[in-house]
Length: 485
Image 1: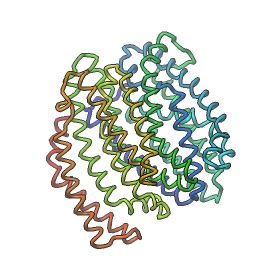
Image 2: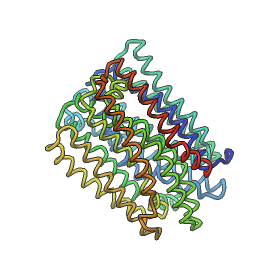
Image 3: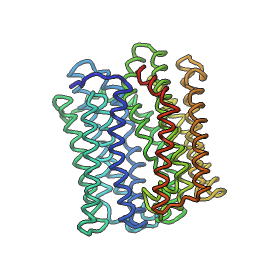
Image 4: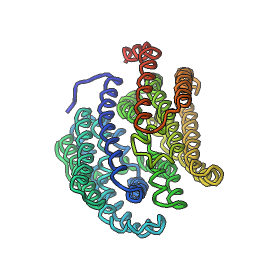
């Protein structure tokens, strides 16, 4: 079962490289889908996906989070099998409930989004909750089981299949309904593969629930689940507002512009690898050691995240044109704001709270963030217009992250000033602001546009910027932190 042991940063980097590969495939998928389908069709897809995200988070009660906490703590094959059987039995039951709820909600979706085209996708509503929930659990299951390489191949194959059905739909000159049917079929197949891998990891898998273990899982997961639900509402409320106030085409533009692309694979890869290792350290009461690893990892990932954010902000019009086409350029402002939001994703600020079992505090923070976001969404939409909800999301996420950091300091007994690598992150930020300002001036002085020539020049400028940043300025720090891993 176990793969060869490698260091935290090297394992996370391997996962990051695979996710980058997967990202390129996913970006190609988004590029083709945005170009081959109309704004109305893409808007319908966005509406279905929006409700799917909300309902699956609501119905799953945070159960997916249990893998990272419970699986690394199992001490025998029987314990591992017992946990996985209970986990996937619960997964199946709750996924069925989610599918029923979404199917019943279709008429409400039609009324709210003012889009009768949604009526044609009942099969999506019934089947996709199970597929989405199961595929989302894939990363936690494989990483916690030391099967990072299996996760890599599984994820890339899934993305290639989704890319393939877009090309097939275009090649056969089929309509949007044909594509959506293929999309659901592909996701169902890969969700089934997750069950098969769980069967192999467990050494057998039956529909059986250990109710004592189930209560422990729910006690741990439900507070996080409610927190996830609140966080999802907070994250998606801006799209809900745009979808309710404006039309389906406006939602299509906002959805693509608000997509947290590219850089999240860096932080999520490190977080995925970090959590099981930190869980063991906290269990052994090595809190300071766990905090130092967390700080070092946060600083290391921020080097890459900050550069990416700066580049996305500076080259936003060109990036949107390359990814989605010029018909999505009205969302440039939203795209820049959501690029800044990526900075909050550098680290999971609730790490120490989660590992100490303080899931209720995570919940309270998320509720506060949601309430702030709901109020600010309306206020900033009225005052700032189309970009207002995006700023609301940025502000609310920042507030909850700082609050979680403050609560983590109380639990660990380590001051906030020493719990987070403030000075290192400030230095990296100033470097990127300086370089970004320079390249932003170049774009405006030379009037670089979004046509083919302008996009090509922007790519060249981006490469030059990257070589200066990584090859000269940050080279020594990256090399030093890599060796220390």
